[in-house]
Structures are given as C-alpha cells and as structure tokens.
Length: 84
Image 1 (tube, rainbow, N blue to C red):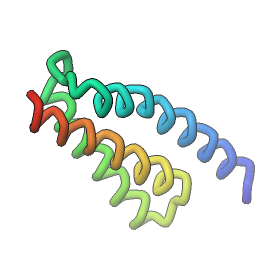
Image 2 (tube, rainbow, N blue to C red):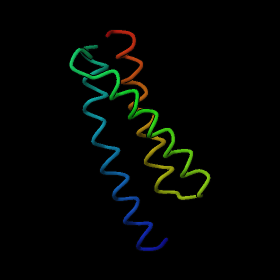
Image 3 (cartoon, rainbow, N blue to C red):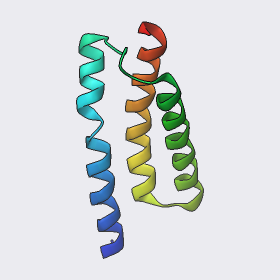
Image 4 (cartoon, rainbow, N blue to C red):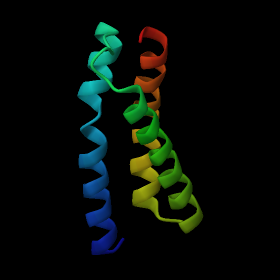
C-alpha cells in the first residue's frame, strides 16, 4: 500500500465517520424536520455516483469511503422521506 493510498484511507475514514452522529441521532429521535430533502437527496445521489466512479476506477479508498457513507446518508434520506 502506497503513502497515497494511506492518505486516501485516512481521509475516507474521517469523512465517513462524521456521518455516524447524524445517522445515530436520526435513528434514535426520528427527527428529520431540520434536514433539507433536496440537499439530502442530492448528497445521497452524489455519494452513489462517487461509489460507482470508485468501482470503475478500482480506487479502494473511494470505494471504502463511499460505500459506508452511502449506507449512512441513504438511511438518513429514507428516514427523512418517512418521517418528514
């Protein structure tokens, strides 16, 4: 593993972990009123596209980060759609 890959994985870890508190809070409280549906939808789509890009490019840090982040933000989006 190269230094560049390590840098990518550290960045992926940090940007992915930042979604955990929001996901846990949303699951626990079911409060999504303050979340923008348009923003959450666009972000979820963007993360999904980054995941596809990472898969096609064979870039492990991008695949890792966007796989985990996609699950978290898609869960938040689903809860926004369900609970408004």
